[in-house]
Structure formats: structure tokens, C-alpha cells
Length: 451
Image 1 (cartoon, one colour):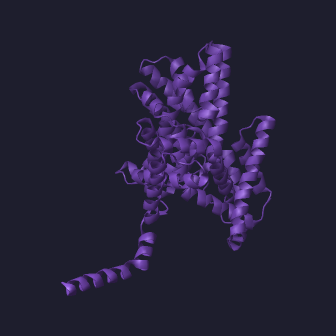
Image 2 (cartoon, one colour):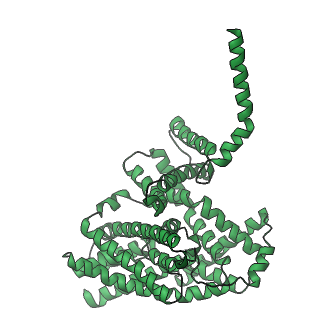
Image 3 (cartoon, helix red, strand yellow):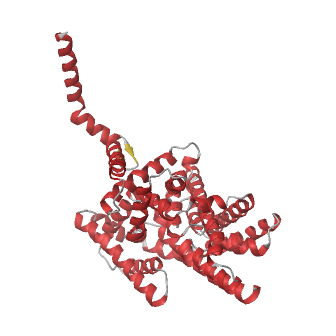
């Protein structure tokens, strides 16, 4: 018995020596959930749930919320990636956004996590930090020629797509027995209004003033359509990504214009790519300062802050306003936020501002047919028009998807599904400016000619 115990003890000691630390390091390096090493992921989940069930409360400070959003965001995203068939069509972004919303609605997500996440999202406005770092980083990594030509050419497929999408949507609605007025103003227009803050809310205010409705009732009719339009856009983005992988000649993998040669500026930038902490910090500070420029522009002339920031970043890029070293810092900031922050942000969005009941309420057959027809025709038109203009059709069509997106959060989800976060500057133009024009002109027509 003593000999057997000694053998067992020696075996356990030997197994432990084989595992620690090399086996532990191998487990940490080779197995990940998203970007999180598997052991860290398990420990993070235990810490969050332990905090919830031991204290009946979860702090909403940034330290705790980084762990919480990372755990749940990458969990939902990983689940979506592993779904058969649809896992390769943008299901990760859909799951990271809509599963948390459903968990909140059905009471499965602990209330303390719901409250803390919502408070953190509202208090910090973390989405704007994410968007400004993505926009500035992607602009700073673009070739100047591509930047100028892309902004000039993208308006044609955007405009054609909106016109065709509106005509098809109204036509399909009429075939289903819906009135043209209802189809356009309560189904088609909300899809292309630019999201919630810049689209659904101004629309509901306009409808309340012009049609004599209660704003709450108008918002209740418009908001679910915005959500479903964004969901359809995410699915289309995932499908376009698959098309790009099947037919590589149709995509620039995040670039709108083909045949852009590497120039001296990029060569110089590569020489300066020695990265340190201060360079990374400079990239973050540049993005934050440009967003503050956009905020000042919003107060002065009413231009949405992300769009004002976008124009400021383009100006800085075209005038060589920062050194190649700072440019490289912005690019690293962009990569960090793209790979490490996207799914945690989508989780927070799903918990804080995505009402599951509104989405479910809009799931009628007629609504779905009109919404899908509108978005698909919008995207298909963008695809074929951009191809005629010498652009990569897959990437330009992804921008068209963003015209049906749920504002900034929709852009993040659609570009994540399409794996083309580099297109964020163009997506913001499509969402913010395109949505503002659609809402303004439509309300003007409603007030002057229809009512």
C-alpha cells in the first residue's frame, strides 16, 4: 500500500512538473475565446459571476466593466462564429448584439449586470471613443489618392441605391396591399434614416408635429423598423464578405479603389513603424482631439460630431499634419480597437439600447418582405453601380449596407460582419449625411405637399 501511494504521488508530481509552467503557457497561448486566452476567459467569468452572486451588485466602474463586457461580448461573438452556415455570414456580430438584448428581456441576464452595463454605457459614451479611434486610424492608414477618389466616387452608388431601394420598397408594399404613404414613411424611410439618434427620433418628432401623432407612438412604430433594417444590413454584410472570398477579383478587402500603388509616404511610414507606448498614446490622443473638433463643429454649425471629426481627420491626412510616426500610432490604435473592443462594445449596445420587444413586434410577414426587398435592392444597386465606376463592388456594396444600419452601432456591426472595419469613414458618410438628407427632405415633402 505504501509503495502504491508513493508511485501515485510520484506520478502526480511528474504530471504537475510537465504541466507547470510550460503546459499552462501552451494552454494560454494556443486556446482563445476571441482574443482572450481560455484560462483568462474562464477566470473572468468566475470573477464576474462571483461578484454578482456574493454582493448582489456589480460596480459600473471601467475596471469591472472591461472584464464584464469582454467576457460576455466574446462569448456571444464566439457562439455566432461557430454556428453552421450563418456563422460565416455575420452571425457573430448579430449574436453579440441581439443575444444580450434577448437575455435582458427574458430576465436571464442578472439584473445587476444589466444595470451596471447600461449605466457604464450611458455615462462613458464609450461608443464614441471606439468610433473616433476606428475612423481616425482607418483614414490615417489610407493612401491620399484612394482617400480623395473614394469620397468623390462613393456618392454615386449611394444615391442610386437609395433611389432604387425606395422605389422597390414602395412597389413591394403596394403589391402586398399596403398604402404607398404607410410603406414609404413608416417602413422604407426609417430604414435609410441613419439610425436611432439621428434618424428615428427626428422622424418621430417630425411626424408628431406634422401628422398630429404622439411622439411616443410615432417612435414606437419607427424604431422596430430601424432595428430590423439594421439586422438585414448585417446579414447582407456577411453575405458580401463570403462573395468576396469566393470571387477575390470583386473585392479590395477594405479598399474601395483598385490599382493604388504604394507611394513614398507609405514607404516612409513603414520606416517609422518602431512602436512604443508614447506613439500609441499619441494615436489615441489624436483621435480624441479630432473628435473634440467635431463636437465644436456640431455646436457651431449643427454638423454631427462624427462627421465633423471625419472631415478634420481627412484634412490632417491630406495636409501632412502629423508625422509618419504618429500616423503609425493611429494605425495601431485602430487595430487594437478593431480586434479587442468590437465585441465588448456590441454586447454593451445590446444590453443598453437594443429593445428586444421592439424587434419582435416588427416581425410581421409584410414588414419583413418590404424591409428585405428595400435593403437588398439598395445593396445590389450599390454593387453594380460601383462596378461600373471602377470601384471594388463588394466593398462599395458594404457601404450601401451601412445606409440601412442602426447609426454608429449599426456601422460597427455591419463592418464587423463584413470584416471590413477599414471602411468606417465611408460608412459614417453613408449613415450620418445620407440619413440626415433623407429625413430632412422627406419631412419637408410631407409638410409641404402631402398633408
